Amino acid sequence: MPPGTRGTPPYRLPAPEHAHRVPLDAKTVRSFPPPLKGELGLVPFRSDVLRGNPLGDPVERTVLVYTPPSGRTEGIPLLVYLPGFMGAGWMYASLSRVLNESLVQRVDRLLRTGSCPEVVLLAPDCQTCLGGSQYLNSSATGRYEDYLLDEILPWARETYGTGPVGLFGQSSGGFGALSLAMNRPGAVQGVGSSAGDMAFHLSYTMEFPHAIREIRRAGGVEAFLRYLFQNPPPTLRPQDPIACALEQIAMSACYSPVEGSPGAFELPFDPQTGVLREEVWARWLRLDPCQRVRQPADQKALARLEALELNASVQDEWGLDVGSRIFLHHAREAGLPAVFEEFPGGHFEHGPRLEGLVLKLARALGGPARPGERPSAPRRGTGRQRAESS
Image 1 (spheres, rainbow, N blue to C red):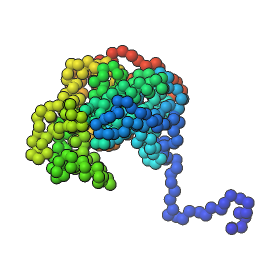
Image 2 (image 1 turned 90 degrees about the horizontal axis):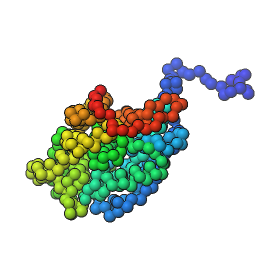
Image 3 (image 1 turned 90 degrees about the vertical axis):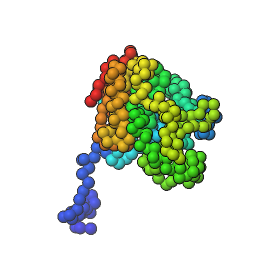
Image 4 (image 1 turned 120 degrees about the vertical axis):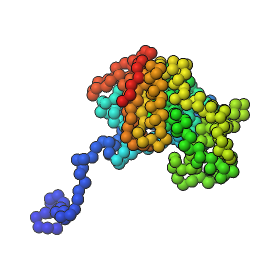
């Protein structure tokens, strides 16, 4: 010990000339998220409508619920997030500590800083053994529309006393949010689509060749699924040929089930010849939001919304930015309250897009927020009869 250091704080040697230090003053709450101020929970929920579903998927699911830092839930908006294909709400309980924010952490920051009106955030689990349900009722997968709208939403509103409902989602979840708003007019008051599945002739057909090759190579759909279930790959990237085949099989189960034959479905193409099955493809197209927004009944349902928000990234690998613009074009023609915003990046860089939807839906359904001030009462009415593009 150097002379004169006894009884003083630990002696520190000078740093070598080429040493470095971490610039601690540059750390931000976005790059290093702090502990949550609100409360995050995973709540078990047993479904009645999923009992006996054709795929034998779980009846008891876990619902992610986040409540605001104030602990107040009465009368404030309930924002329901629908994850993309192969996603489930409970996955968003994983919180980042370094250089990123989860959706829950983004919402917590917005509420903590007063940038956003208070909301309750809920995310359900609507997965199937094929990856996803598209949040629809199907005789080949199960009654996932009924599960969400007739079981989860009433339970959440009764349990937490929440007010108007905003439904938003990423990719398949964006499709689900738009579809459910059209299927059940008045069930929700706001909708947000982040690169939602639409313009099927652009987004799905690019995967058809990969799916056809994989299914043919395996010896058919059943053989493909049997091998995949028994030999799951260590990684399954979205644009891998196997993932493309699984996704098109899952979409077929959602979009073109064989009525009267539970569990059965039809592909929109012949996996041996590659020929498009026109009658099956036509069933898919009838569910395409870009087609539905042109139908009077669906236009009437969308016109009831307080908010109809779409966004996408300009380099979306499935062209869903283009699909969103097609939807916006038809919405404009119908005078619907659609708003569209573009972001840099690709399909999976969705954090900022989801944050934008949370802000817009919360403000539309709960009023503008100011630091230290409670949000105003929810607005009610027939929706904003306008269409905008950024």
